[in-house]
Length: 387
Image (cartoon, rainbow, N blue to C red; front, side, top):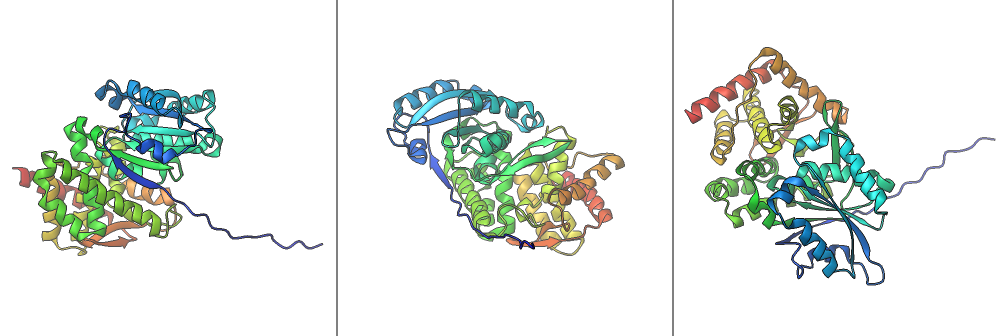
């Protein structure tokens, strides 16, 4: 008896929203409740995982969360607040995933419950991964608390942890139930974290929106002095472009070989690893963008004067663009990040560069000698600009 293959094709509609508010845990603020929308006869369990740095910067946060849930007890059934370290190093310890899974198990969090991650991009990556593997996926709400997580990391669909010496080696794609940006959390950021997040705004502007790039260049002083309106627009437009790419870009779960939103990231990821994550992700991205701009000018893809102008903008914003490598062995190790970048997706090497502002250009080969020369060229230009 010959059995023919059984095959079906189906589609799944995904939807998630990014909401904006101020002081999310004020009792009268209904933003969180509205994203959950439970009825009075069917409250939803909520488990919070909070970045320790955020908790320390906002000493009443745990109390506020508890009181908020009590005030909205017809919708929210509070279970626990789990506090974990923040920063990229939190993703290096799989034990943190286990702590979240234990809390999910202990509090009987199911697929109709919610895990709410509150913190920077690294913590949100970690919590998202744990939520995606518990019961094959429990509902996740992200409340990002840094510029970089509000405009980029938290609005995507990726989760992950670092393993085997590689960034995001283990992870998942999962659509969050909702993302809620609360500007109030940005008011306590260190200067480094305020500046670092601007890198992702510059990045997405360079590859997608020349007018957005002009906005950033015209508001450098406002951004540096922490003007609320200037930063809120940068976050809004950056997040909008990011979500637009995911929704209509044709490859939301990265099944192909191209990663256009990762302009400047092949070296950024490697630099973070090589410096034991002492460099913030946004700081590394700024360095990576500058390095790839120099390389693009060396291969004739972009005018050197334009590359230099963009590098000058990054310096004006406050980025240290020096590549902190001194030996030939270190440079070779950094260049190995190109193959690791390809390996992460597989398939053909695809590195996103730009030919002009707002015009991306994918390349499939890298001249390693020119890229190594670009490191020295960038460092020399940085020294000359700040001299």
